[in-house]
Amino acid sequence: MPESLQANLEAVREAIRASTERASRDANAVALVAVTKTVPVERIREAIRLGLHTFGENRVQEAMPKMDEIGPAGVDWHLIGHLQTNKVKFVEGRFQMVQSVDSAALAEALDRRFQSALEVLVEVNVAEEPQKTGALPADLPAIAAVVASAGHLRLRGLMTIAPMVTDPERVRPIFRRLRALRDETSQQLGMPLPVLSMGMTDDYPVAVEEGATMLRLGRALFGPR
Ligand SMILES: *Cc1c(COP(=O)(O)O)cnc(C)c1O
Image (cartoon, rainbow, N blue to C red):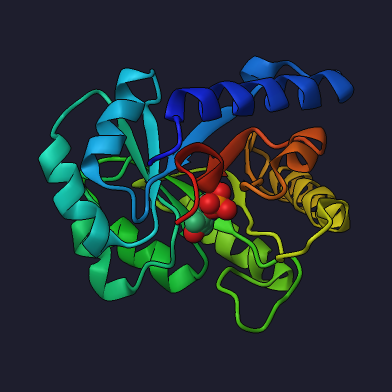
């Protein structure tokens, strides 16, 4: 018996509202990306009917058949998982944003391949976990500079995946750090970087308190994978 998407969505919206209130932020400043990896097309259609319009997938190969089946439904797709340079050719015309750019080489490959503009976030491995994807904080300035100067890429901000912990308070410093890195990068490049994509099912209320403008939620909406 699948969980009620509508009830889950209402609970998520209420949690976002409560977190923005605690932080004196505007709840409308927090965008929701519904993460649909492993979620079948039928449930994605239900999400669209409920008004969700931005979806995140982490594998191009899994996403493509689902996108084709759903067709142009006025929705945006974000790539949130690691992208190999040899898969760059599948991104154009399908994804509106790639949140997981983590090297200058990948940025250059996307820029070469794209005719139109692609929105980009640089993914940062803030906690410097060895097994994780994402750029190390020390490499961020160079990668951000490459993205910012690429003619077909629009640098919009930063993304991070916080370490898995049982107490979300423990990752608060990670979110704070991403926000500080965003501020530094914005100053370095002399351009606004409005998007902070941080916060998943287990930690999003804390991420909102720390300034997240984009949440990527899978299980909180669709139930356990
Ligand atoms: C799966 C995934 C999410 C969503 O995770 P939940 O814990 O189910 O909310 C968010 N971001 C990325 C990059 C993911 O791979």
